[in-house]
Image (cartoon, rainbow, N blue to C red):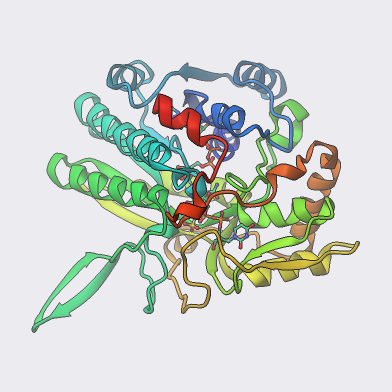
Amino acid sequence: MRILVLGGDGYLGWPTALRLSWHGHDVGVVDNFARRGYDLEMGVDSLVPIAPLPRRIRRWREVSGSAIDAFVGDLTDPVFCSSVIERFEPEAVVHFAEQRSAPYSMIDRAHAVYTQTNNVMGNLNLLYAIAEHDPSIHLVKLGTMGEYGTPNIDIEEGFIEITHKGRTDVLPFPKQPGSFYHLSKVHDSHNIAFACRIWGLRATDLNQGVVYGQETDETGLDPELATRFDYDGVFGTVLNRFCVQAVSGHPLTVYGKGGQTRGMLDIRDTLACVELALLHPAAEGEYRVFNQFTESFSVLEMAQLVAEVYPGTCRIEHVADNPRVEKEEHYYNAAHSKLLDLGLVPHLLEEPTIKGLLTVAERYRDRVEPHAISPTVQWRRTASALPSHPGVELAEHHDR
Ligand code: NAD
Ligand code: USQ
């Protein structure tokens, strides 16, 4: 299959491109290096060093004998977006290319506007490019479990049957996202569903949970094939952060009570889920939603797991003043059977996986910037919370 991976220089896009190439697909990657730019803005870097995209691609050709085409440009540029679809002629597009940090989107007005502009506009340009060049292209779009929020009822996979005043319909599951970033994904989902309905596009919206892990079969073949590993207070995701905190002697930062429960998955399962969606495409005109996670844990449970597995001293600290506005204790039961039905065999969060993550963190411990660990972005807009982040002034003036 000819597959274009948008965001193919990122944490998940790069290893996905390698996996698909390893499995014999013709792969192209698209990226504008925005993610590398956020590192410069934040004054941090991936814990695991990552090679520039051209070098990664060269190394992959040497290691695997397979070529990956690269297209450098911005999806918010409609001309670029359209020309990439026209030139590569993909049968499927995997769309990872968005600003994906909730805290980054909550820094201030400029970062919220940037996040929603980048994500919603890029996705909309892509829908037009597909509709205009080849509506049979299967769009596999990365959404997020955070679109649903934490309602006090079971979460279904995209849709819920509702009976209201004696009439029944199957409708999109209600969305209660918790950041301007998560909201951008809700807007994307609506736009994709609409494009499927009016233009007959085919799309799979993968509502993915929080990803952990860093190594995959293919990235492990050579250090220059490594994918990034974020641990900082803005881009680091919770379990990856806890492992880096453990090896650097920092208390594990559980925000508030720690009863926040999230769907989680191993990075290797991200690759498997995306490939399963590609191999079993949506039908013409179909907009379908898969909840892409394998297990649920509360934040405190994850901290306890890391503390139990880490061989040294490890302290859990409840950050009393949770920087986010979120429920710290809540009901959580989300369906996630569709990918299992397609054959997903999950990697579960067991001791060897946590040990593997701790080993990666230990290997690069000298690169940890202690100043980057604590959370810096406040969800609340109070006078005392401003200015919340060193990036604020620059971004306010330039509007990115
Ligand atoms: P990432 O930031 O590492 O990768 C995204 C890539 O897209 C980056 O390389 C960035 O430069 C590129 N990009 C961003 N905007 C672009 C644009 N306008 N044009 C071209 N390229 C652009 O993020 P990730 O962790 O790999 O996440 C990938 C996707 O998966 C995102 O859409 C994210 O919302 C979703 N997701 C991630 C997680 C997670 O835990 N990492 C969980 C659920 C969903
Ligand atoms: N948390 C802590 N301590 C920390 C970091 C986070 O307690 O040091 C808590 C947060 O308050 C939150 C939970 O852990 O309740 C998850 O936070 P996170 O930063 O790991 O994840 P989140 O902000 O939700 O975003 C990440 C990815 C995003 C993706 C999302 C999937 O960055 O791209 O969409 O996970 S989901 O959470 O299912 O929406």
